[in-house]
Amino acid sequence: MSDAVDLAAVSVVIPALNEERTVAGVVDACLRSGAGEVLVIDSDSADGTAGAAERAGARVVNWRDVDPRQPVPGKGEALWRGVKAARGEVVVFVDADVVNAQPWWFPALAAPLADPAVHLVKANYVRAAGETGRGGGRVTELTAKPLLRAFFPELAHVRQPLSGEYAVRRSTALRLPFVAGYGVEVGLLVDVAKQYGPEAVAEAELGSREHRNRPLAELAPMADVVARTILARAGATGADEVLQRPPWLAD
Image (cartoon, rainbow, N blue to C red; front, side):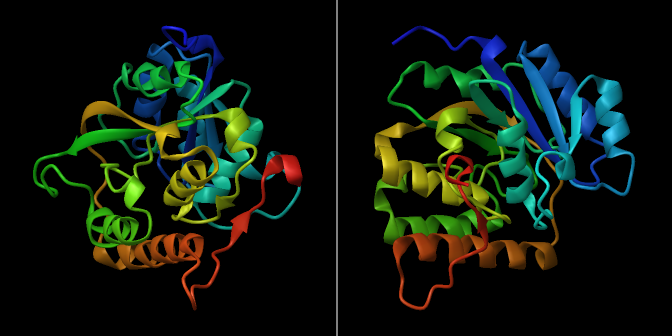
């Protein structure tokens, strides 16, 4: 095991849809981290997201330009295409709506991958005061964690299973399916643990994280796809398989 991951081999991928107000700050933090590539995957934003990201110094790619197939609406589609477009050996994902991204987050997320047995690194953080204290968000605490405890207890210790900040080996990501919507994070978590063992999942402490707090009306569909993703991977009777993109290498 080496002591560190070469940051020049790290691609930071930022999925973005109508995040003109915050995306430049995220890009700036990524660039100051020393990552070899900062890539924004723009999902047909109707505002100035793409221009703001480009002016901040990111390489901006519209998701339609990565693959000729019609994009499937949802975050997972942007991440799937981001993996294909990335040039680095390690891909670090970060959400475009984070308002306090720090340059040290990205080497911290990549560092555990110096161990060849680790394939996925999830962020652990304290949510901003005024949200939900030291726990995760509402979908995390009320949907993801209870279902993981029930069906995948070996992953019950993961503090932020739905966090948008995580690192993965690109070679690993190319071999895994991506849920098209908001179940993408928990789907990857379960799939990595199934394929490589729960010890292949590590966590990195990122301190405090602040982002846009979504209304309950937006969280209900997220909770639905997260629940169906976990139940489908558990083989639960009656669980509908969620829409997902296939592994690139098998496509």
